[in-house]
Figure 1: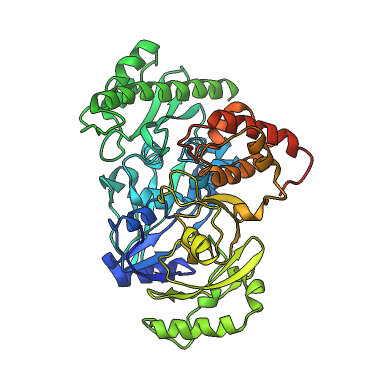
Figure 2 (figure 1 turned 180 degrees about the vertical axis):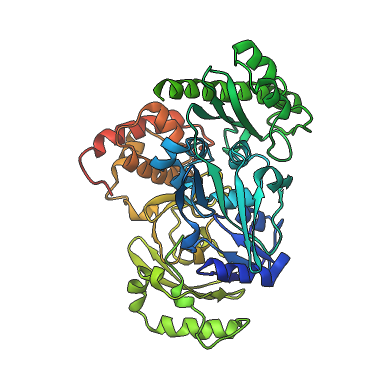
Length: 294
Length: 216
């Protein structure tokens, strides 16, 4: 398996990279880790004439705290996110998600932005960014724009990014007081991809009711999504076990559920409900611990 | 991956589109500079902003493998795994799935395990590559290799080099692992013969042997 020939470009900064992406348009492809793109090129499912390797752009590799938000550069690796002490204490959903990605070899080289821009339906990051209402920061030679996570994932392997745009960073809210994060995943044993992955952030009010809930589900449909019916059934309510179970039965409502050799649509839909409950339950448990501390 | 390819810098005079001739001219100067390559690698972060373009034909690629510098002519589409096996005759890393799933091609990039099949050789420029040949030999087995032999942790042996690399890296970060941590930590490597039981024992045993000493 050998990819088709291409010209290799290695821009040293974002400005240079956006110029190249603008110049080559659909003939160019960004390399930002390569665990998805390089195999696709070997299979000749992708055959870019220009491969733009942005992994050398240091200015896109950072974790920055900005008040009650975090900005994370697109080229931050899964390993860096997994091992960030700052994120573990202030935005634990990200390290907890990173830890579950693929395997150590993948986490050492794979990047947040590479994964998000590829938008694999079974990737882990989309669940977290959707649950957190992240803001995706896209840059092109002519300017920049911020895309809400809910509008970023368009379809299977398709995002709102234009050919001349680069995903430069994402912004996510830090964990608020009385909040709890959790990621629950049913992992494909060989590939490490999510058969079902559910990310949850909950915030309790002073009486212990669910003031806010954000749930993101990956692996189930063509793209990561927020289960509106599930969230609606819990928002503002006291989260008892029975209510939780009933709400989570709606985890895959309105979604065309994926089916493959590993998991039929029926089984996957069932897993979605089970893992949604596990994620929300865990997040609630942590939120309640955090409420006692504060 | 940062700190590389500054030698492929576009000549300052070039404007607009960069032709292959521009690139080859720029690269040729540095290659004849020979010994400077090693010192340039660490300074790449300070290099002026510029873009490099290479290929699609063969271009000079300098690889640092097991402490040695190799200057090769490779097309950009050649993976590190192919360069190691076909150009440098380092055949320890195996080509099995060739799509970053099985772990048989595991090498260290700057002392971290990585799939050599998903990494272009040209991307690996400026990084220190370590292969199984770099951590032990038939006459001088590393503690992990020794433990694999002791526990008969292989059948056909094809996945073994990748496993030994992954185990070595895992134990460097987790010197006192539990069985559960071993299973999760080695999740990037597959053995179709199913010798996982032996491999787990080998890792736990190697952990004991490695305590307090360098192994590689």
